Image (cartoon, rainbow, N blue to C red):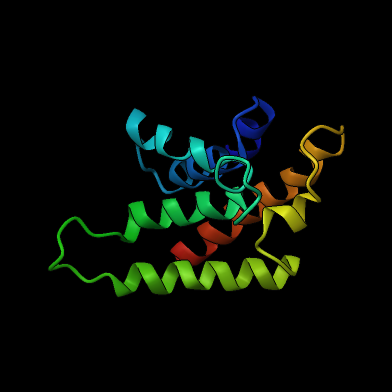
Length: 130
């Protein structure tokens, strides 16, 4: 699902969030879908944290997040931290600037970032199912 979203021109964060939620059987609301949009290109194309990684973290929040301050937040923190570590170990960075090489215009951009979309989706699903 994430790969097809990416192919349809959704951004990295949108694609991962949608792909993970689909795999987990979660019906994502329109508001949930919209919240991923500004994370494309590392938060509004700031090239900070990788948007694909953020999409995975957002999906973790949907599964393990809390709705009241009395609920435990550590499960979400621990799961997101694990995703962050695994992504960094696999690619050597979590920075869009480094991973994307500050390149949103060349023909190499979509295939290159597609790898991160695929990996973030796979890792997030793996972590959530373990």
